[in-house]
Amino acid sequence: MKKSSKIVSLTGVFAALHAVLYLITPVELWRSWSIYLEPLEGLILGPWAGFLAALLGSLVARTIKPTDLWMFGIIAEPMGVLACGLIAKKRWKPLLLIYAIMLGAYFAHPLGRELPLWTILDILAASVLIYPVTGVAKNLFNEDANRLPFIISMVAFIGTVTDSLTRVFLLVPAGLYVILGWPSEVVRVAFIMGAADSYIEDVLVIIVTFIIGTPIVLALRKIPGMKYPLS
Image 1 (tube, rainbow, N blue to C red):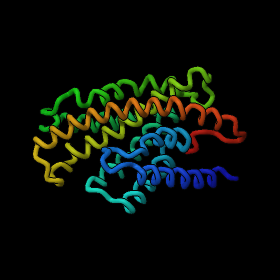
Image 2 (cartoon, rainbow, N blue to C red):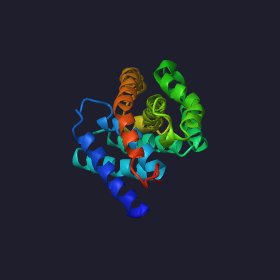
Image 3 (cartoon, one colour):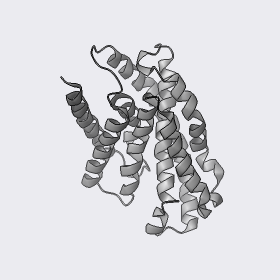
């Protein structure tokens, strides 16, 4: 099978998985269970095919089961995948630029300067980790199996935090809180409650990737003729 055919077929598979994970997620959760798939989408498919798979999966899923906050996931989930893919491709500069733009816009916004700093500590930590994690992940699919769980977990952390950063950017600097009709007090409460949930999700993504992601990557490394990431 040609590489282009492999990319197309695997993009379709991951898009379908992404959609299914969203559809089975309880509606009460801020983010869907697809966040546990995002690291693998980026690491296996690469930044561009991974982004497309997450975008297609998000669009299809939210067409089937729309919510009032549908616009956040459609953009944020592909961005989380893109982050993991860029790290796998050793392209830390574009990712750091994305963080600089989004964080800069957030702190330039009056509301961003008023909100508690502790609510985005994971985002600030991820921005510092981008360069060193990219350095240690440069040979991810040839890495020593003993180091692989730690490296993949760090990539997953940056990916899920990039998802969070995109949601923060859309809500505050991009002005979706105005479109949603949220006063500043509501935004503040949403940030405080959302931050607590987000930190829990960060830990869960790291654990799930550590336990499940590592065996998958190790299995993929044994397939002859396949070079990852695909795009």
